[in-house]
Image 1 (cartoon, helix red, strand yellow):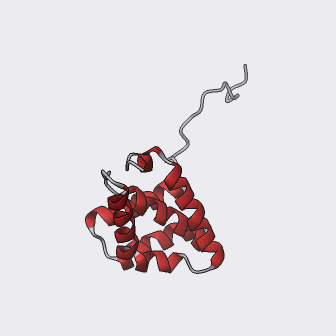
Image 2 (cartoon, rainbow, N blue to C red):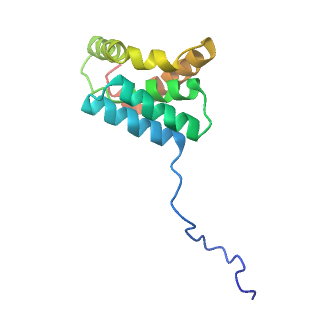
Image 3 (tube, rainbow, N blue to C red):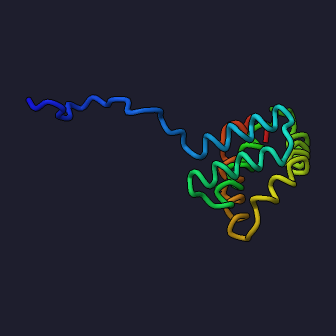
Length: 126
């Protein structure tokens, strides 16, 4: 048995890296819940974008999905769509900063698809 040989046990070599998606979700969720200014959220997201070498579209998709998941459950389709419309209008300035190109916006459409397929959206009685 060699000293230092890999015995299958993983050792902690330092702090765990948090995936980009979770970092963006945390920044945006906190921003929405605490009413943080768009400029401050954008600055934090931009920092994570550069740190993880991601695109504006990657950020846009995570921002849109996270904003939508902050929506409370509703009892009717009309109320749910009203809430979606309100959230998008409220956070339009943030979304516009990252949804710059058609390619970025396409990633947003894909994120929207993920949202509407999720069980949380189905809880809105749709």
